[in-house]
Each structure stands twice: as C-alpha cells, then as structure tokens.
Length: 181
Image (cartoon, rainbow, N blue to C red; front, side):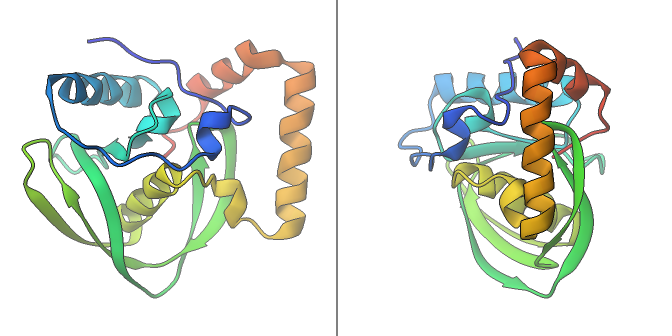
C-alpha cells in the first residue's frame, strides 16, 4: 500500500462533482486501501476520492469506535433532521477549524466494496463525517458552510498563507493539525 498526497484548497479537483462509480474492481479496492492508509497518515477520520485527485463518488472513514475503516461507494443522503453545531476541520484546508452547523441526523445509502447496498442511520459525529465527505463528492468545501464574514476572513487567511508559505508549509501544517475530516 502507499499514501497519496492530499489535495489542498485551490486545487480545481476539489470544486468538481465526482462521477458515479460504475464498477467495483481490483483497482478500486486498491484505491480504497491506499486512501485508508493516507487518511490514517494525515491523520484524519474521513477522506474522499477527490481529495487524492480521483473524481469518483467514493469515500473512506473511521471514527474510531473499534469497527475499523469503512468505504462507501456512490453514497446519497436520503433524509436529514435537526441541527448540530460542532467545530469542524478538513484535510484539504489544513490547520483551520470552524464551528459549522449541519443536520444532527442523516440517513445515507450507498454500496460497499462487495456491491451490497448499505443503509446507515447516523447522528451527531458520524452524521457530520458522512455529510462532510459527501460534500467533497459534490465539489463543496466546508468553507461554503461559513457565514459570509467568517468565510471572507478564512479566504484572507488562506491567501496570506499561500503567499507566505507556499505548498510545502501547508503540508506541514496538515501534519501538525488534529484529526480532521
């Protein structure tokens, strides 16, 4: 297995809607294995295929409840309820975290790597992770969930970092951050 570089804010692949996965084959299984290794190395709790430059509707996650990593193919949220505010970060926007409001509960469907349909009822943290990763598949970054003033400040910070540090420093910031989504 090997790790991939994680695409950082500004990379156009992060703003595009990923394509449906047509077939689960050995290449896709290998991609999932490498994505899990990349997620753990980051360290993160979720990683979507576009974050490693692959425009497919697939993500991996492990929220640390002893069940190990999971992969979801072509996921869809079919229902959501409530509101929950929680501090959220992103491996593609390293070192920055914001309080984000998302639905408290979601029902998500998709497929596992064996082609079996998966149906997940999730609340709070797991619901947040699933929503965050699904956003990546739709080309949405957590910056779009910020209020206008906070988003403006975040963009200013990101532009300043790019001018001062360049890409290498951003990668270093990712390694020092807490586990992000």
